[in-house]
Image (cartoon, rainbow, N blue to C red):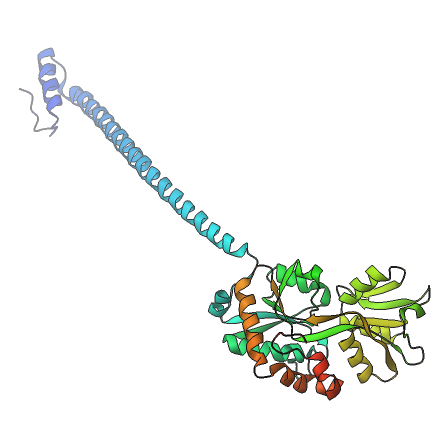
Amino acid sequence: MYDLGKHSYKSGFARQEIVLSQFLGRNEDSDFKYYKKRGHEMKKNLLKKLSAGLLIGTLTATAFIGCGSSDSAASSDTASTDSETESTSESDAGYRTLDEIKESGYINIGVFSDKSPFGYVDENGEYAGYDVYFAERIGEDLGVEINYVSTEAANRIEYLQTGKVDIILANFTVTEERAEEVDFALPYMNVALGVVSPSDAVIESLDDIGEDDQIIVISGTTAETYLTKNYPNITLQKYDAYAEAKTAFENGNGVAWANDNTEVIAFALENEGYTVGIPSLGDEDTIAPAVTKGNDTLLDWLNEEIESLGDENFFHADYEATLLDTYGADYEDTLVVEGGVVD
C-alpha cells in the first residue's frame, strides 16, 4: 500500500490517484509532486468558482438595491419637485399676504429718503416725514418691525411688482394709469400739480414758456405725464431723483420746476428766492398707499386701518407733527384727508 503518512496529503481524490499509481508502478516522489500540483490546480479552480458565485450574488444584490435606490431617489426627486412647485406657486404671486407679513415679523415699506417733509433721512440717520409717520403706525398696529426701502418716483411701481416692498408710501398720486398696475388703498392727502420758478422770473402760466426754455420734472411723476400729454411742445428736462432735480433747478438748468404742488410750495417756503407762480395745475388728485396688484388681504387691512385712524383724526396729528412748520395751519384742512373720505 502507498504510505500517506509520509506526505500527509488528505485529498480523497488524491488517495484514489495514488492507488492507481501504485498499480501502474509510478515513482512515489514524482507521483506526489504530480498529485500535489493537481491538488493546487483543483483548489484554484474551486476558488475561482466560489469567487464567481460570490460576484454574481453581489451583483444581483447590488442590482436589487440599486433599483430600490433608484425608486427612492425618484421619490425624493418627486417630493423635491412638488416642494419646489408649491414654493414657486407662492412666489409667483409676487407679493406677501397679510398673514405672511405677520408671520415674518417685518414689513417692507418703500418711502422717499430725500423728499422733505414727506419722506427723508434726518440728521440722526432716521427716516422721518409725513409718510413715515403713517408707516410707523402701520408697523405698530400690525405688530411687526418696519424695513424701510428707499425709493425714487420712477421705481415705485417696479418695487411693488418685483416684491421688493409690500407697501409704497412715497407721496404716490392716484391715477387711472397707475391703478392698472398697482392697487391703491384709500387716500390720506389731497394734491395737485404746481410750478415753482425763480422770484425774478416768475412763471405764472405755461404760455410764458419760451421755445428754447425747459421745465424740470422727475421721471415717473404725474407732472411728467401731464405735461407730456397736454403740452408736448414744452421741452422737459428729466431727472430720476428728487435731489438731482432740486440741484439742477437751483443751478438754473431750467426756467421752472413742475411737481406736486405740496412739494413745490415746500421748496419755495424753505428756499429764499423762489416763488410758486402756478399753485394748481390740472385736476385735483389724491395721494394713497399702494400695494402689489391682487394683494387683497393687505389692501383690505390698509383700508380698514385708514378708516379706523380717521376716527381719531390721525392724519391731522400727522400733519401737525411733520408738515405744520413747512406749510402752516392754513393748508392743513386743504391737504389732509381723514378716514379715506375726500370732501
